[in-house]
Image (cartoon, rainbow, N blue to C red; front, side, top):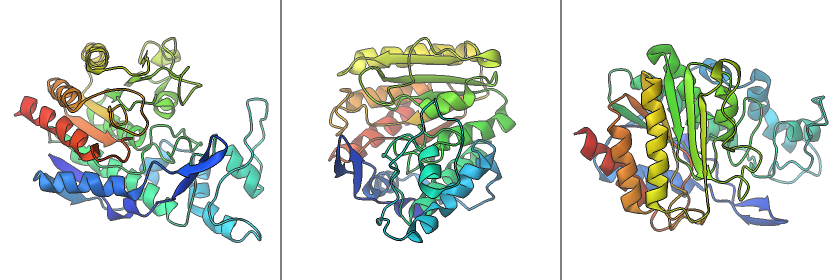
Length: 341
């Protein structure tokens, strides 16, 4: 399989994130990128570096002012006397507040809904590279059965003008929107253990994208405010948003049954291509400790996606540091390859 990456994706590497009233180790470390890259190289996949193109494919999904903010916020922060070494918001507007300020702390809060997206000098280069990987992978899918966009940092929690859950730019949504220009209708299936709330928002009223998400019940875990089964889309997109929240400690049979339900929706939608938000944080040994999906489960998931026999773009989302992380990626690809060979 063709693998797309860019070395700048490894630059963003904050050590800590502020959650639960304390600084804890940041789960999205550069080592994730290095593990994914090593597995792809060891297994003989063709690896290609994405070129940097214009911002237009990004601003087709994200608010241009938000993109400019991401480009410039660290320099603005660094020029502020007395501010710390990492950009972290300390105020957040609620649904009761309606005016976007221009003052730095206020604007930072406007564009973030939590403290889960620390920003350093290397953040924009990394998230920009990750988005360009998704864009180039989408372009390369034309004429190929499948392409893997080895995106890191991840993206599926990011809204058009909101960073959230370690996500700054929504790689999968950027790529999916681009795929609609070539393939017409596209199905985006999210199997990360957390709901793809940013992706859902972006496509919620669109008739050309089916969004399916299989994730931990949001009553129990992040993103908490979206991902419920009664969220089915609106307007032209009504009926094209399909959420399957599952309980903690979900195991292979129930998870694969949910994937089958999603893929049945995909087949009924009859898209020209499929995008997959490919998270491995549902794994039994992932530090998120939410589901109990095994290597065999990921292998079978790969086989079932390949069995759709549609052009497929795999976009990396979560999956965090453990001795088993690389094996989950390998298992999914082995299942995908066996079915498609």
